[in-house]
Every structure is written in C-alpha cells, then in structure tokens.
Image (cartoon, rainbow, N blue to C red; front, side, top):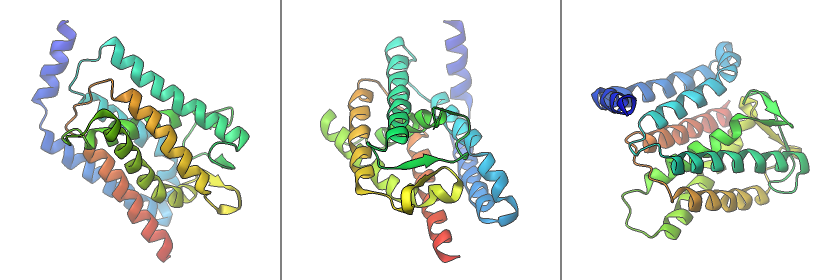
Length: 222
C-alpha cells in the first residue's frame, strides 16, 4: 500500500507539460533519424526500445488502479495480439501472406514478441481518444477499431521501409484491413471492461500517426 501511495505521489508531482514536450521531441528526433541515411539503420535497431519506452510512459501515467482484473485484461490483449500474428504470419490465412523483418526485435515462431505489446498500446491509446465521447461501449469499440484501421492504412506503407514486415509481392491485401478491424474490435470489447484514464495516451497515438504520415510522405518523395 505504501509503495502504491509513493508511486502515485511521485507520478502526480511530475510536470505533464514537460512529459508531453519530451514525447513530441522524442518523435521528432526519431523522424529525423529515419530520414537521414547515415542514421537510419541505427534508428531501425532502436525501434523495439522506442516501443517499450512509449508503453512504459503510457502505463506509468495510467490513472486507474492496477487491480488483478486490469492486469489480466492487459495480458489477454497482449496474448491475443501475439497469437493472432503468430497464426497469421505462419499460415497466411488471417491477414494475408507476409513475413517479419528484424525491425521489431526478438522473434519466436517467426513472430516478434513485441507485436503483442504494439497491439496492446494501440488498443489502449485509441480507446483513450474516445473517453470523453458519449457513446455506448459497443459504439466506442467500433469507432476505436475504425481509428486503428485508419492508422494501419499508413503504417502498412511504411513498415517495409523500417524492416518491420513485408507483404508478398509488396501488395497489402484488403483482407489485412478487414482482419485488423475484427481483431481490434474483439480487443476493444474486452478492453472496455477496464478503466483507461490517462493524460498522455491520446497524444502518444496522435504522435505515432503523424510520425508515420510524415515518413510515408517522405518515402514517396525520394
């Protein structure tokens, strides 16, 4: 109990404006790092650490209690994300035919361990965007899943450039986006059973989306 109170006191003492400015600076530096040819390989190597740092900050500012139910929900979403990608990449039946590069780090059964974390963070942050919107659980889940698909439309174009994953014949099938929406919807329906009040989660999602939009624009100009 004392540890939890000390953590909350420390978290509440942190200047959120400085944290948000740090995140903006962090993503700007990352953007420049990928664009500059001399540093691009280094920044590709750093992708897993950037994902872990983003997740750490999001969870650090999670305002609800980390009760057993919430921890279980987070783990279930991670597990669904990892397993669905493992089945997808090894069968080609869910998202289409693709394979992972080394950009997301350590792999088991041809699947990066971080991919489940990426799903969890995207679900958490996209759900947070709709916290203030007055809709029922199902409507919010549908809308948040649509936001994730819109995000993926850009991500898919940039992922091969960052050595994250590659599609057969360099073509992203429509099947991928349909599957993304369905998987995201299931996750959001599960996630809505938890409380995800967070002062930086929406910003992290927006920064990532803008980051990939800029990279997409750059790679199509050069």
